[in-house]
Length: 218
Ligand code: ADP
Ligand code: NI
Image 1 (cartoon, rainbow, N blue to C red):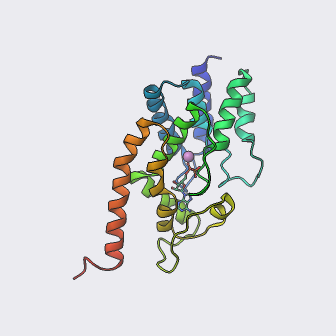
Image 2: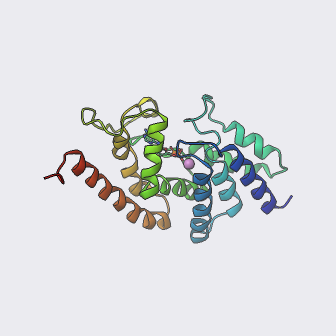
Image 3: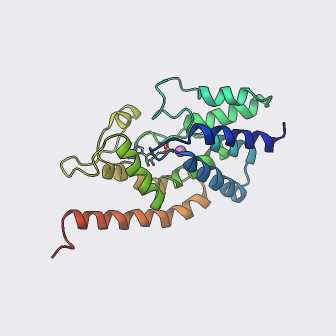
């Protein structure tokens, strides 16, 4: 099978697996990450096969939707093992998937390859801006969270345990993660794109707070 055919088969598999999601992790999230990762990859000069496989498979074993505590992305590995790939490629893709997720404001990023930096950036670009806002509220609804609770201020988490067990409002998620992502982008290409998307969120939050306090109702 050619690399192109493997990518195509993987995209079809993932499209089917993620067709029914209402948490902001649907196929179109994966599709945007895939396409944006390809564009960033062209700018940064990394291996497009590894980047594409990791982008397509990156949420298949996500901790938010799987109970397994095993760090190895078992479903992605099983899928990759169904092709006769060079073990180096399977290993590189699995390592990216293991380290892609944000795990708390104070938790160190363990990503180590250029391909991983690119896929992580593409995933994080989809968490900010207009789409990031939509996805955050979709996830909040999926998790039965309040939109905003002025009595519960945001917290910056130092451990993954704290971050994972946090149940606070979706507005808090902006302060606990989304507004931090601009300065956490790995590649110059993504840093540039993140600036404008970040501004959209800042303006949105400003308007949200004005309306919350009725400042525009005079
Ligand atoms: P990551 O693996 O870094 O979490 P994902 O692709 O799985 O990245 O998507 C994360 C997205 O899920 C966030 O950007 C946000 O839209 C949503 N999300 C995760 N946790 C929360 C939360 N506590 N409140 C609101 N949205 C959340
Ligand atoms: Ni994702």
